[in-house]
Length: 157
Image (cartoon, rainbow, N blue to C red; front, side, top):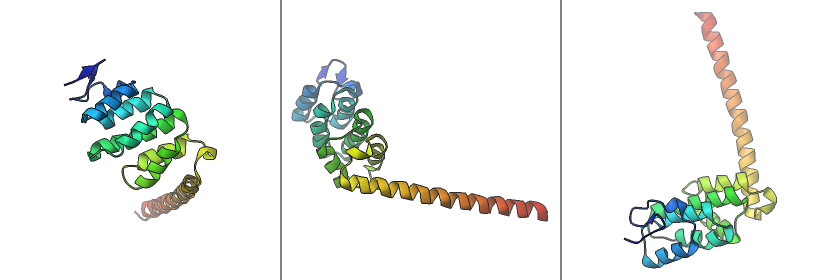
């Protein structure tokens, strides 16, 4: 049960504070169980250059939950750094939307400037903006019909 600087690899306690990429690498080599959790810590505490290759490796872990945490780390990296590495963009593209990557993709669209997005992500951004506008108009019309229906029912009573 290796424990160092408050990081408990067996329970996962303290790993969100991980700030040592080499410690993560050593834990990866040992086959520790909470690598996805720890890579979130790296995303919160390290440079994009340090965390990017480790997120990529964590996205390939056998445990689906830990892979999900690695995708979450990608969203945190986008939020904190305002950019992603080409490898992280490619990993998000491979994960696609609708699944575990949906929030990370949303974070990327929100926090990475349009000019820094690869072309396929720019198309995704345009699609999201148009979809949101259409949904907003649809909801406005639904609310208007509901308000009118309530008004008509209120007068007929």
